[in-house]
Length: 319
Image (cartoon, rainbow, N blue to C red):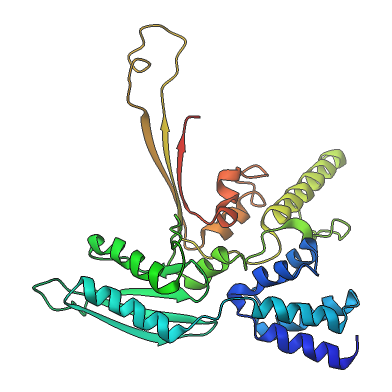
């Protein structure tokens, strides 16, 4: 691939919003699914573009392939951010007499929205605003907690109409860290084991075993330790985990017993239980459990599926 074609690829990829990058590359259908999974979409855009151009070069991409990518990019509906702001603000102001809406453009085609809610008889409360981050051409918005829960449906309606989407996706996912939420929702977080090379020797650390211990036991311990490290790496990958502070599981199950006349077995209402895991960095903490010998490897899918499912609120019921 000559420099002219490489520059064409570079300029075309640079104009793709990061939030739409994976969608457009899949629609282009030139790079394989495996190749895309091995790309780090969390790095800076300039570095990402360089990696993608190198991949195209390895596949001997032509100027025709670059032109097809450009067509895919142009095929996306052009989004008018100013029109979105105007429409969003009008919808809220028509429904509520006292509401103040402010906007600030951010990077990656995102807009920050600050909403100070009022009522029909009270002015907007500037001390308890709601913050919303919306990424253009996506059905996703990130919101802070809303002090007036009755206004949540109105907020969703305004986002849906102004963004020209059929609906805004509601996800059971919460965190204080916007970058982590964004990485999970837009699949910019790579939790795949395909980047792991099984031929690469694992980094060995001292097992701190008694020097008089049977050599067979030492060997078995080393094999088990290597297995745990391999399974952990296959499950969580080489990348740092998105930052979440908790995962919550609500369990509902009916009591089962082989004895007739058991009081709990006759209970019609299910037994309910709430389990919550908390940590300043929950996913990194889960990643360290098996290597530390605190839990068996692999961990339960209920714990490891959090980024892929895009949720940290779970309801578990009987089938």
